[in-house]
Length: 212
Image (cartoon, rainbow, N blue to C red; front, side, top):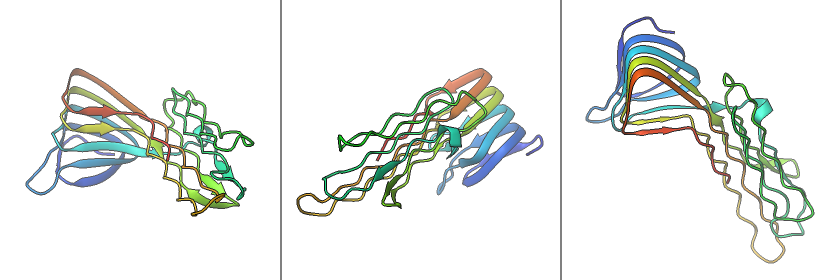
């Protein structure tokens, strides 16, 4: 938490909680640019919020259990690409995508359903396991950024997008060696902006991550 004041960020900082400020500005110097990495829900109340070109405000930490994508499991070694791909994580408003299916004998892992609660973060993508060992980690879901201000100017990037799932390990060479599927991407998070004036020439992103 922070009381009223002015902050001009020109480096990477980690924040969460409630900020009440006159001015929040992310800018660049000759060496670095300002980046806020939200490690939990971030709520900013200010007169003016400015993200200059080259700066980033990001919230990617989501792992709500109810919105976690299904895991992919491969316990076979006699089929090329045996097993199933992990499902994607869900967000509060949208379902995660199901995993692909490379072996017809095994159903694809399900994507997580939307949890319907805007105050929960998005779900993590499913992992991929083979005989109890994890081979690909699912991407974290997007978090939450909420801003109330008189003026919001975004020339940089504000993102609560999910992280991509890890790519699969390469299959062993030769015929009939089993391959492994990639992990599920994390669900997209939440960005909520309320202001008298909002100018955007940069990017506002809250999309789901890609599967591996």
